[in-house]
Image (tube, rainbow, N blue to C red; front, side, top):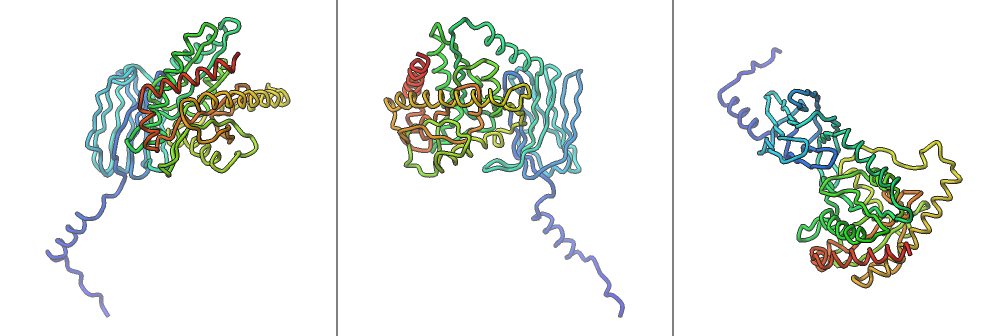
Length: 382
């Protein structure tokens, strides 16, 4: 039996056109384009509905980084960003047709480009991250930190304050959209000011603005400064809006002190994924020149000192705010893995609690937290 003839009628063409209008476009939609500025690099992030293929190229005159994207279905509404930045003049995104687009980063000076894709995590979609790095500035900052370490007057104590999160990683978010990354930076700046008024003390911040630093790099910065004490500043979050209060955490090498501490450590350790980190091992234990016995002795001593400072800080914090826990808790926080530096993580309050969020937004409360941390630091070194 022969096959039936297939006729393309006007009705069939109409049906096909209607179906095409309602079918989703193939390829990835670029839904947003964002920018972050740091002292030694600039970061551009594209939000995507799915992964894309890309090829990059650079030129020096004029300095540009170009990224050719393949498999693109649509661009965001805003396709050009005019910038006031140390390294970038503007960013343009152009539709080349046939599912292709071109991202051009117009630079003030030639920079090293690092480009990578990030998979979805929590509320973050697929992302394409472009870091344009001033290698000379990075090296200069490292040398300056080393210089502070080498030329500090005898008896001077160095404190490194680490405002958590930043840039792509907002941290916990309050009911009124208060961002953890903003609050902890303000408290860090206030504590820094108080410490640097002391003659025999010098304090530094790991980050001075709204940009992300990988957790391991925060540890490395503290070590380059020759820190005698490292304090990571945070504001807690919970699905239960009734939970509130301050808490202090130390490192544990053998498991968390309780399930809540483990969950918090897991959350904080996810910062590298949310912030978009290219991981750089910074563990002192990976140094082949270090004797393992010496390393263990250093670790034991720094942990004992961490516990001592944690107790002092809890005594001070309870004067200004209620405590979630009366004693310090322990878990395996990446940012506390400094075998040679006493280190603690301070959760100042619960940003997800209505009253705590209100307090965290008050300059007066921020100053009280800073003052109490300052008092604990003075007692620790005396």
